[in-house]
Image (cartoon, rainbow, N blue to C red; front, side, top):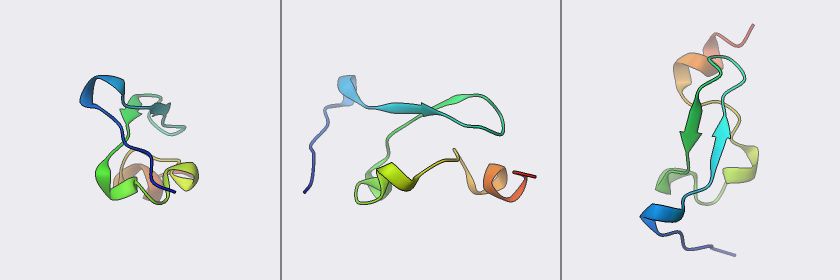
Length: 47
């Protein structure tokens, strides 16, 4: 199932490491539910 998003209506989440909001990206289209961190750097620094 692919959901189409317009630029003005992108879902967002809060990164648990840096506490900043980040928005949906096309590369996350198939795994948006599993995305937790805004960047690779935050994923590495999660501890």
